[in-house]
Length: 109
Length: 118
Image 1: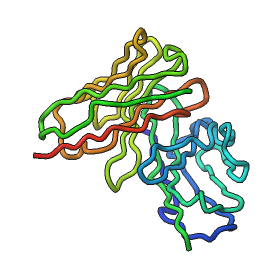
Image 2 (image 1 turned 135 degrees about the vertical axis):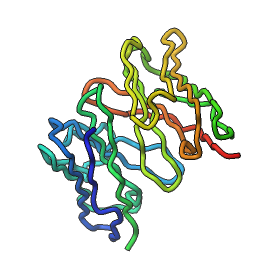
Image 3 (image 1 turned 60 degrees about the vertical axis):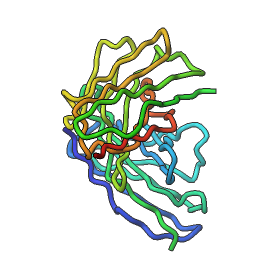
Image 4 (image 1 turned 30 degrees about the vertical axis):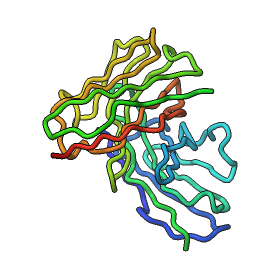
């Protein structure tokens, strides 16, 4: 199985900050990487897919980048609604486990 | 409106079984791969299983393979997860989600809570 290493596990930031979350995979995944936002008591919501494609309706302050085995989610100007937990996920093949990263909780500083 | 609605969760004793359902509406269910994902208390998300549009391919994470069975009924726009030999570690909120092409999990249900406890 492909292993995921997401960092940091917790991030303290202020409104207006630029925030970066990193996800590393144990093997190349041809950019089959997604990012999700989850708030307490809610289902996750898709933010980014194919490493850098913004899901319809997601604010442009969210962006994804990377290739190979290292990927990044950036929030350019943190808003109050962005305090949540973020997960990366690889989905490189239907026949392989679609693993999630461990999650990054973005907290108010 | 695109919607997924899970049901069937509840309290079950260790070693017991449970069948979860997910009913889809607002889109052509038979066009999509479908998956089950769970979120255990205090832990991260875990993908459990997926099933091809026609049900001909099914894949599972190691932790549930042999205990859980994913299935679907396209005529009734329904996805199922039969869970057996449940343990306390299976306590979680269970979500169904859809996938098409390069877009994973763009729609999720609200989740159904499974509690395994004596």
